[in-house]
Amino acid sequence: MLPDDTALIVVDLQPDFMPGGALACHEGDAIVPGIDALLRARRYRTVVATQDWHPPGHASFASAHPGRSPFDTIELHGHPQTLWPDHCVQGSAGAALDPRVDWTPLDLVLRKGTDPRVDSYSGFRGNHGPAGSRPVTGLAGWLRERGIAEVHVCGLARDYCVLWTAQDAAAAGFRVRFLWDLTRPVTPAGDAPTRQALLAAGIAIGA
Image (cartoon, rainbow, N blue to C red; front, side, top):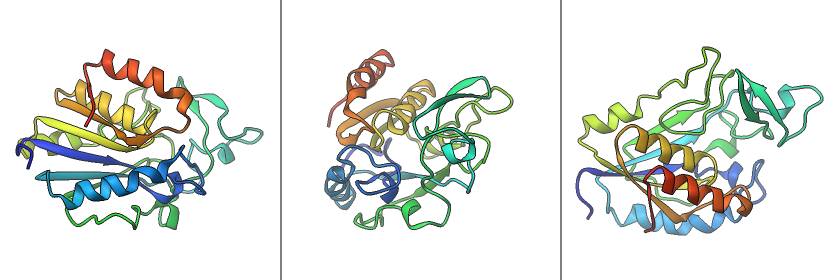
């Protein structure tokens, strides 16, 4: 059992990010058994899962921008925005938490990306919105109320939502460990920049 002040955050472990899904991550399904085993081991007193939960026609979907294709980059609210295939649409099977995992230990499911105007990679903050700011989700305060000082992060995708969640956790003052082997990227080409970004933020990498 880890110390009571350490929480696990499982990021976006959802079918749409698995091979064959709408926005498949490279080998995304390879981490499912390890995360399931980690939850079953009950090593963490506090466990959070984030869940991408987009309304139809979300601003991050390429389909919402005529003439654009998935993985194009546009400017949205004054900042670069990658356009994605439609994914994790609210209520769809692809948006569910992965059914191969025993989610019984969960204390909180935090749904993100619910604002149709704003993308949301991180569990702690949305991306830049119309006001120019990154709105908070309330997760940092919730963790502090439970006495959490350190968070361990895993899930999908390593180079986007898990990375941003880890960076924002560090910026909020938490000690952060990035469980590299329990993450997978959209594409392995992003692994080197991801490692650099983690080290620059003072985030530990490893089991």
